[in-house]
Length: 322
Image 1 (cartoon, rainbow, N blue to C red):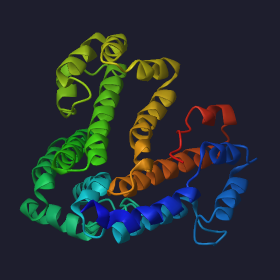
Image 2: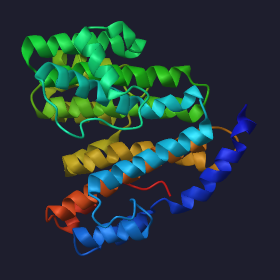
Image 3: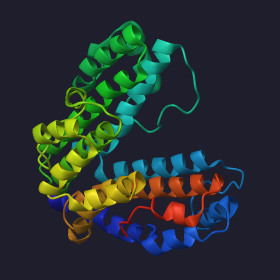
Image 4: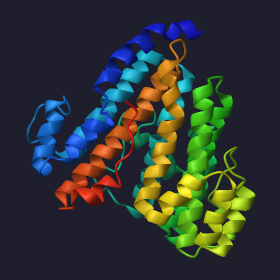
């Protein structure tokens, strides 16, 4: 089975040379303004060649190109579904909000997902939750009813976001690939830590946190959740004891540096896949690296567009995979 990926991994090895390195990101930061940054990206082959192409469209094109590539290389292997869980649940959330609020805002949906936005909206409108995949149906029903009853978009988000984390965790459990197993647990662990930090910072209590977190191997959600009642210092104390001193150091600098640590932890965990030539791991790792690369580009260009200086942006830049 693993030998089936030899060709795909060989293609990924060639494409890894096009990934942005830390030095490339540093060069992008040195661009004088937003337009120079766009030209820098076009010179690297980003976008469709149209100098009038908006940034969001350019970034979406890059995401779509990566999705298409991964599907070509992995075929219908269920292992790659973990890569699209976040986008699929984002679209479910957007569909619920459009149906329940009669909003039709543009660009709410991610493209290239297996479930079309119109299908999602129709399921919500007709209350046909059972037509949705099993990992979505119950959460979709609960979130829709919650939004209709309370009008709270936040509570709707909590329900869908938790369902997405549960789906990631299950995908990791179902996988026989070590990278996917580790990636899934890291995603859930980092998300749980983020939730605890944000809740402590906004004076939410442990009962609120329990509605958001999902069990994982990386932390004890019982202890992490309990620590929130003691405030941010208590959460930091737990994280220190659990082996996440780097997260605490980042958090003490700023929330932005902490957010960087969260993404960098994922990159740190997938980098060893560079040296695995016979499994789907390098293909999945490349897709994750591209996603973080695109996220970093968006942060930099949005900052340039809004006049933030390089020192402000540097602490928000992620470590690259290349």
